[in-house]
Length: 347
Image (cartoon, rainbow, N blue to C red):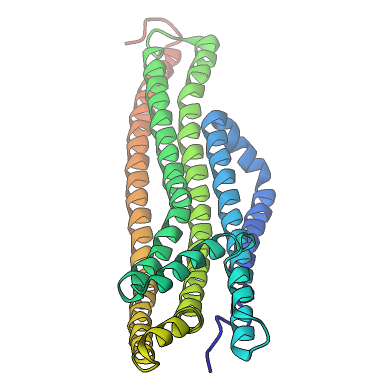
């Protein structure tokens, strides 16, 4: 007895969709708890931070849209599996079932099954069908490519904001050091405080854009991971449906008519075994990539970003130490001048 694609294939995709929505909800709750601090950080660089949030919203919307699309595809797979079962049970004519299985209302699943039926009817299934099934993985990669690109782009925008903030900080420190000489009194101290506002604003710009960029990139990475798992579930179910249910249904009678009913079953069994073996290798490879390669790549990228941020922080600390030493020297000069009662010029 043939096995259908799944008892309830929609549940698997709903699970990943629920995880994505729950993650976004928790992220929104955390943002609400930290709202005053986030607003202050956003105002440090509204243009870059606004661009980061817009790209994140677009990427999250696209990922959720793809997940909802996969949910529709799983429903289409369940419909096709039910039709194949009805044909085997003799309760529905094969011609009518074929039309329903390849109807345009099934979307991408129907279009793919049209190609599968064409390949099976040409008699070159052994050489063409495995490559046709492999194209499912490429289709999943195309869907996730945009989300993956946006995730990397958010990190780059955050780094651009960091470097821009450092440039503003360095320019502000240069202005502060240039205004220290020849000053005295309360007016000079007020001017010094005003000049210090520029480097502080630059530091706020750098750290705020890095914060928004890294957080939004991590969130998009989680959504891309859910889309990856959901896509693999749909692809594996579609491949199983084609190999187990549709290959015997669409190729068996034609092959029997042309070979007397003996060669076709052996050929069909060999084809099914070859495809199942190939699917096992693909599933093992996908699982290995999900556990090691993707996690290792993300960890490596996070480590590189952490190293860059640490280097930038060390540079800012060095600038701050130099500025503090210069300010202490100037304040010491001012103190000596005031201790002498203003009787002479400061050395």
